[in-house]
Length: 108
Image (cartoon, rainbow, N blue to C red; front, side, top):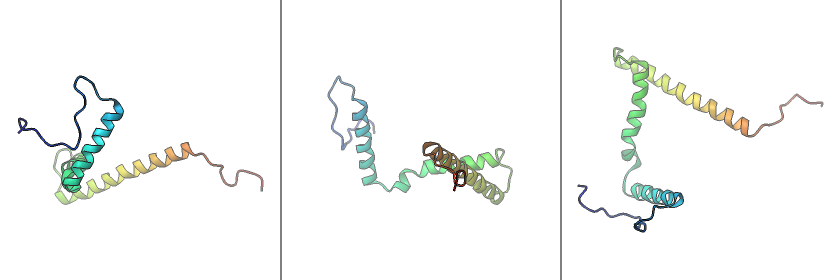
């Protein structure tokens, strides 16, 4: 399979020259758009999503001894904790970037 040339949406760069970071970024963007133009994103990301969700199963039941329904219930809560932590970190980062005057701390 690797012996056959593939058709690419990207032109080859000059021989003997390494592409600049900007060119590598552009090439990656072109490749991503070409891939998404030909494939369903749910299919291309299915393995990654499954691995991401499986981490919560392993987190709540590392030995695999829980009843599947209980493991699923706990994994769902572990997933919610994960995303709630991301939300909290995001809120703190926004607050640090854009400090505002606190209400009620000044003269009326």
